[in-house]
Structures are given as structure tokens and as C-alpha cells.
Length: 607
Image 1: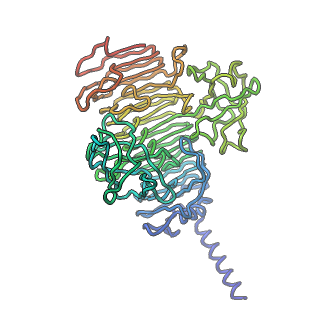
Image 2: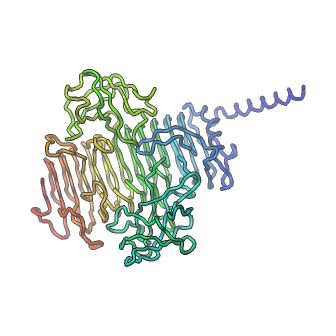
Image 3: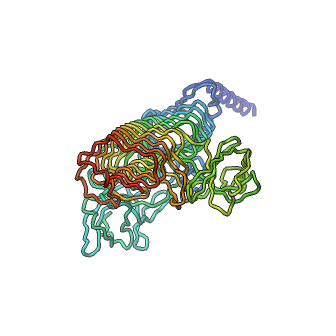
């Protein structure tokens, strides 16, 4: 008995000594917690336990550095941290299995020292939540078995309507009811759509866009080789096709309710959602943050299932510089807020309003004192009278966590006509950021190059948009579908190079630069949505006609740009005007150089 008491006392003393030795430390080598490289080690539970121990020390009194010794670390679902996160523009399925959950931290640096983080199954690789002055750097994110299946076309028998293709060696699959089903640990997907890439260049195949794929009634004629009823004459032998579903359960990095965040020297090679999704956060810097392949010899042709980077309801300043964004299935960057739809008028100062899109709800929308404005979603006209939030509370949940419906009381009376009988939205003007997007390369991706919807100053400069397939730069705004705010009022697009955009048609792709808010009743619109947009000193290399499309703009300048025509592809766009302007006023188009000449009457159309 005495021996047992002594042993217990010794253990308690050792624990106290270890705890005391941790206090005041500024660097934590995660190898000390059993976190070591190698596929045979599941580091998910080890990382979760280590962070639980270290987190209390990250109280902001000093800067703490968490070090991964350089190596390849494998994160499996078993033992991973479970979290209920409602993530903007993602599927709201919970819980999420998180590989590296960073929460409630201050002044913390996580340094991978060049490590590769490999994930298995369906996981959210990294979260940074409710934290301040934190930096993540020097690592890559990838999945052992991505949820996109890649195949190569071997033969196209267009006469009989069959295509033979070979599945990439890393893809796991099985045949169910004569259908090819991609599968992995804890998931399976019957993919029916895809994106076609040119072999070698890894550019999207010209004029294909989203295609149907041959995964039904397949016949496995040799190991990993299938013959399927599938007609598409553009898929010549050698074409690589990414079979994809539409699920987007989690981004590679999730940033939420954070302040002063830096992501530096990080490569996301694959994620089943965005590369990074940030929401309700202030001041975010991406420096050499890339969503990219593993170099020129990578046998994959795709990266993320959706956007490379996405910012929803953020404020302060978003800086994104020196990134490489390629092969993703949506934009390189998307910056916006979220409109709430007015659902009920309670009294002259109180409304109930709701998140409307199934992938955008469950997080805070605003706080007491925030400035707001009302908008008519039919015409996208903002009311002149702005207001402020006096109080806001969730109606359908105890808190904003998981909520869709809010009751908001304002400081001043709400205009009499705003009620549930109309189509009105509310925009939070406080949670809108400035944006600086510079010295990035965007190439070989689906849909669009970049998308900006913020009233604050936005500068897009010194970037290369190389075969973005759709529009290179989109200024949007939508209170009808995605409910993504809002109007841009100070945009400068300068010294960028645009190389053969618009090889495919996707949503909003009316020009290399497309200013395209969703306005159901443009004829009834009296005001203008966007304003003060300057496009200057850029280079456009293009095989087609449309350079700039603009809708509902007051103040648009296009000057000192160079437009060069090439014959890389046949022209095919429905818009055969250099400049197509709808409901645009105070515009200037001057001092531009066209190597094939410029006919003002034909090349500028104003509606």
C-alpha cells in the first residue's frame, strides 16, 4: 500500500513538473507528443491531444510556435477531433472530422517546416477558429484518395456511341448495377459530370464546359479499362477527364471568427471544397498561399472541388499575393457578404430576416451597432436610408450557431414598404473588406478566374490570368440565388495579363472582364448597382471578340490597355462586341491599342 501511494505521488509530481516546464515555453516540438512522420502512424488523435494540452498556454502573453519536424504526416478519420462547424458556401453536414483543430488561440505560429499533410477519407484538414494574431505556414495539404476520379480517353467510337477510357491508378472504384462508382474510406460517389483537360497542357478542352460522363452501363474490358455508352466527339484519345460530384463538405483550411490571420507558404493540392474558406474574420493575409498541382510532373490535372480561396462576411483587409491557382473547379478568389431576405415585419423598427441558400447559414450575420442597408432584389436598388442594428437574435436556434432566421431591431424606423410582401434584402455594410489581389497566377481552371463583391477599395494588379476558361474577373452581386452581396464602388484593375480567357461558357461569362450583377428587372432599375471601376494598363491576348461586359455601372473607365488578337482557337462566343454595356453611365473608353484595329461603331454597343 505504501509503495502504491509513493508511486502515485511520484506520478503526480512528474505531471506537475512537466506542466511547470511547459509554462513559459515559446516553442513546442510536436515530436515530443508522439507526432512523427510516416503512413503507418495516424496522427489525428495525437494532434488533437497535443493541441488540447498546449491551447491553455496560447493566451496571448507571448508568441508560441508549434513545430512539425519536416516529413509526411498522415491524418485518418479514426480518432480525429469532431466539430460542428457551419461553413459558408459548403455543405452543412455535421460533424466535421478535423485533422488540426486550432481554436481559441492568441499569438500562435504553426510551422510545418515544409511538411506534407496527407488526409484520408472525408476530413477538414485545418481549422482556425476564434483566434487572434495567428500564422500558419510551410506545409502542404493533400488527400491520399481524392473524391474526384480521373480517367484518360483511349478510344472514341463516335459512330457507335462508345468511349473507352482508363481509370488513373490511385482511383478506388467498384461496379454497382453496371455503374462505375468511385469510393474511399467512408464515402462513395456515382459521378455523372466532369471536366475535360488537354493532355500535356492541362488546359480545359475548348468549348466543352461541364460535360456528362460515361459511368452508367459500363463494361470493364481490362483491369481499370472501361467501355461505356458515351457520345462526345470532342474527347479525342489522350484527353483527360475529371469525373466529379457536387459535394463540398469541407475546405482545406477553415478560418472563422478570427482576427489578424496569416497563411504563408502553404500549398493545397486537393480539398473536397474550397482551398481556404474564411468567414466573419478580420484582416487576412495570404502570402505564397497556393492551390496547385504537385509540379509539372504531377499526374493529376485538378485541385479543389470548388474555389481556391473564398471570403464570406469578412472585414478589415484581405491581402492575397504571390499565389498559384490552377486546376480548381471554380474561382481563384471570391469575396462577398450575404444578404438576408426580409421574411416578416414585426413593427416599425423590427424585422425577421433569413439566410436563404442551403450552403450559407449557421453563423453570425451581424452585431449591435453594425451599419446596414436595404435592397430591392428585383431591381437591386439600395434604399438611400441606411440604418444600424440595435439588437439581433436568432429565432430558430438558441444562438446564431446553426441558425437561419434572425430577429433584428434597428435604431431608426424601417421604410414603410419593406415587409414580407415584397422581395427585400438586408446587407451588412460593416462586414465588408478591402481587397488587394496581386502578383498571382491563375490558370487552367473551371468557371472564372476571380470574383469580387465588396463596396470597399479593391485593387487587382500584376496578375496573370492564363486560360481561366471562363471570365477572368467578375464583379457580381446577387440577392436572388446565392444571395451574395454586394455592389462594388472602388475597383482598380491594372497591369494584369489575360491570356485566352473564355474558351468555355459558364455562368456570368459575357466578357474577359464581366461586370454582371443579377438584376431580374433591369428595365425598372433607376439607379446603378456598381460604380467607380477603372481598368487600365492591362494586356489582353485573345482569340475571340468580347473584352468587357458591364451591367448597371455608374463610372467606368477602360484606358491604356493593349488588346492582341490570336488564332489559338476559333471564335465562338455569342457576344461579338469588344464592349457591351447595359444600363451604364459616365463611361470612358480611350487610348487603347488594338493590333487588328478598332471600329467604335461595331466594337462599342450601349443598351
